[in-house]
Amino acid sequence: MVTVEPAGQKGQSPDAAPAHSGTGSHLRHLAILLLVSLCVLLPGLSLLPLTDRDEALYVQASRQMMESHNWVDIRFQDNPRYKKPVGIYWLQGLTGLATGHGETSPLWVYRLPSLLGALLVGLFTYGIANRLSGPKAGLIAGLFAVTTVELALEARIAKTDAMLCATIVASQFALIHACLDPERKQVFWRNALFWLSLGLGILIKGPMAPLIIGLTGLGITLTERSFSLLRSLSPVRGMLAMAAVVLPWLIAIGVISGGDFFRESLGRDVLGKIATAQESHGAPPGTYLLVALGTFWPLSVFASLAFVFAWKNRREKAVQFLFYWAVPAWLVFELTATKLPNYVLPMMPALAVLSGVALTQGGLRRDTWWFRFTYFGMAAGGLILGIGLNVALYHLQGHVSFAGVALGLLVAAAGIVAWRLFLANRLMPGLAAMTVSAGLAYAMAYAVLLPQARDFWLSDRIAEAVASARTCTDPQMIVVGYAEPSIVFRLGTRTRLVDGPQAAALFSEADCAVAVVAEENSAAFQTDLARRGTPVSPTATAIGRNVNGMKLRTMQVFAKPQNAVASR
Image (tube, rainbow, N blue to C red):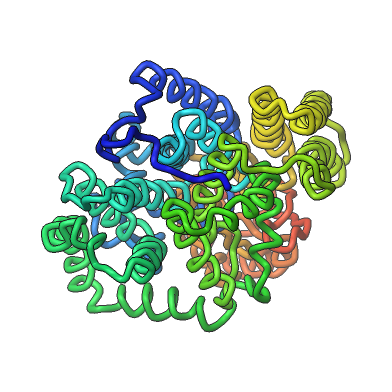
């Protein structure tokens, strides 16, 4: 039986670096991982249009935070953002200030915290696997983490999930060092990292980080029938430090909102998602397991094989730690009514570490039909991404991207090469081909195909039409029949999302105005304007698909010249 042991010498502190890997080896592996991570995660960061609805809500709220200088009570236009805590808004706002753009920051600036979070996920995943089986396992696990479909997406959109995952993996990095310390000493750097990362995780997404980390610690504690792990974490001082991170804002927002924040975030958002399927995202138990085959690719190709390794080594403390990290929280999410693929992302690094350790310790049998069948998923994923995304573009747009097709063929070819190399037991060349296949797939998707799918981004088409029709520098923006939050970011915070009669009144009374009206509301809008003595015809048209339902929409743009007042 293969035994998982901490990567240190006998008699050496478990927190010391592995004896067989010096500082130079670590730096070399970390440099490789960081460089590959940037090549995989960076393409398309500034080219991918703003996505609805979550990303658009976050970036617009962060912009308003900088505009208003109110860093406590976060809002989207006049609506409070009480479903999530303040952490990601602060990170996006600080990034805007640090880059010098402030409230005028382009979209890519708001996405930098997500990119940083994804990079940290890869680095801390490396650290955990290195602690268990040396730098080679660390490099493999880190590559698995940063090449997964889900993390590659989250790295490019300005939401909470990549940075949340980073805070959880950082806490787990500290926790596994404590878990594998036979003396269970209280180590300052380790405990500071654990509690401060946990506090930041709470500020980013409330109870998600404590749930996953708490279930991990609880599983180890029950298995050992001892509280020594908890005591080694300096719980009193640690919780005070965590409280210093979390409580000031919680107290402030509780007072400002009159308790509405807690009712909205804990009552309606957290408990509501457990009990009912919110926003049409319901699915039966087992959904995450099926979805992860795609969202965790290419890691998912290896994870099923690594499970056999985990079962054979189930009594090893390291394997138990990874089990308690991944499985209990996964079951909790399977049993909740609302299901979204990003919910299980924080468990992905545990599978990456398990797979990296299994591969380096020779724990995967290569002489079975299941091995050959499973590894075909490497080629299948490359073919599906390389060809399928190009087919999707043709279906949506009616044209072919030659750059997309060329990249797609390379994605498919690299996936097939990786499959053949893995079957031939050529692990590191196979991982290199796997990384090339995944990296090219994401560059193709986010830097080529999605930006070219112009009909997919209706808010961008509206912004272009408005720019061609506006008659003054700062018109009153009015939108009727289209309420995606991306339109507010594209047209400005003062944009009014109203119904037809309100739009006609605002348009008539404004010094200078631009109204964007859904085609089905256009006749009533023009009739109402004529009744008010402000007859006007559309001067531009925007056509695109509403992100919800993918229905093709036509929006008409009406522009009122400055000082053109209604006749009395």
